[in-house]
Every structure is written in structure tokens, then in C-alpha cells.
Length: 278
Image (tube, rainbow, N blue to C red; front, side, top):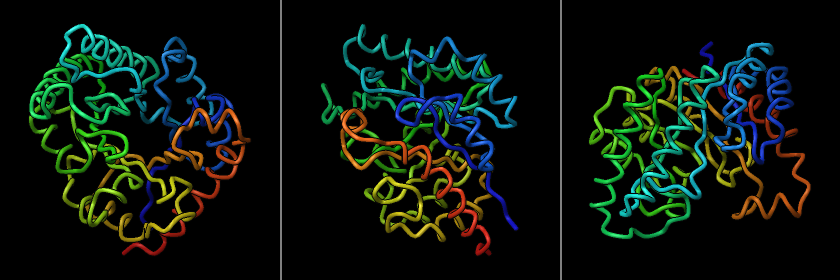
């Protein structure tokens, strides 16, 4: 039977990093994706050691980009974003993590400050700098395609592939997320196949961003496509509470189910689908 490698996010809204590492290892996850929060950066070696002790690997870093924009037309603002991205790369390298997710604009920025063409050009140039810095440290960058409600710039596979080709670095590829794809792609499985060898990382979340199997996305053809392209990376859960503004929701609600129920349900559900793959 074909077997995927599964990872789940820890930190930020996903609970205590170290508690999460222990629980996920017991559930059968092989990796953890760590939130790229600056307050965690000094803990890189400690997190890496905790992973090794539990028999899992730090599979990826999810950059936090609500304040940083490497496509910003202002040089000083752009440099703040580049510096943050480089620190995120250092965080990854410090724990032995091979992958950083990076998108060339700030989360929640809904229109360009110049033109889209100019910001794509500027974003690509900035990512080239970060990619070269990352390559020296054995880290690769994955360009994530968000959806239209998060950004105006990179919203689908075609845009992510185009940017990766423009950057033209061997340690730069694309990543896809089924939650975003459910909004933007006509056929999720077909997009996975089109990504092919450029797909370096993969997020799964259902149509409501709950655990796979708790919404209406059909994951069977998607996982079949992942298998068919011989994807070797992690299938990673990026799940959120049922709200647009996550921090506000967490403040006013008990979200313990998010990091207690979702991890167990997700891996059990996807492993059942694995048994059906051709």
C-alpha cells in the first residue's frame, strides 16, 4: 500500500509546540510544521531536539507574513520583509528543517501599491535574494498560492509556477493548499498533476478549513494525483477555527478541539483513503 508522510502544524493557534510534537508523534505523524513566529526563532535548536527525541522531523516552516511584504515598492519596507524571510530561513536551518513557505506579498494586502507586473518583478527579485541565502543553508523555498480573500498577487498554481520560473533557482518550487485550491482551481487533482515536479510542499484542509473529511472536498482524486506524480514531500494539515479572524476567534472561544480532535481525525481519514488508491 502506498504511504504518505504526514505532518501537522504546531505553534501559534495550533497550541504549545512541545506538547504538539509529543501528541503528533503518538498519533503517527512523521513531521511537524512550525509556525514562523519571531518569538520562536531563538528556540530552533530546542525544537529540533524535541523532534528528534519523539522520532519526528521538523518538516517545514510556515512563514508569518501579516506585517512583511517583500514586493513593497518602498525599499525600506521591502528590506524589512527580506530580513524577516532570512531570519525565518535561519530558524529553519537551526532546527534542521529543509523547507520554508514564502509568498512575495503581505497577507491581507488586497491591491498592489504600484502595478501587479511591477510587484511581481520586485517580489521575484526579493525572493532571489532569499533563495540564494537559503541555498547556502540547505533550505528550499516554496511559493504558496493563497486565494483571492488573502491576496491579489499569487492566487493559483499558474501564478505560483510563473513566479518560480521567473526566480529560476533550483531550491525554489511551489506549494499548494486544498483549502485555497477549492476556491481558485477548477480541478484540484488536475492542478496537482500540472504542478508535477515543481510541487515541493502540500497543505490539506477541507472546504471549511477543518480536518479533511469534515467538509465537502473529495480527497480521493487529490491523493491519487499526489501519488501519480510521485510526490515525496509531506502531506501537511493546515487547519483553522471557523472564523476569518483567527486571533479574535481564539480569544473568545475554546479551541482545544482544534489541536486535540483535528489531528487524530485527519490522519485516520486520509489513511483510509490511501487504502483506496490505485
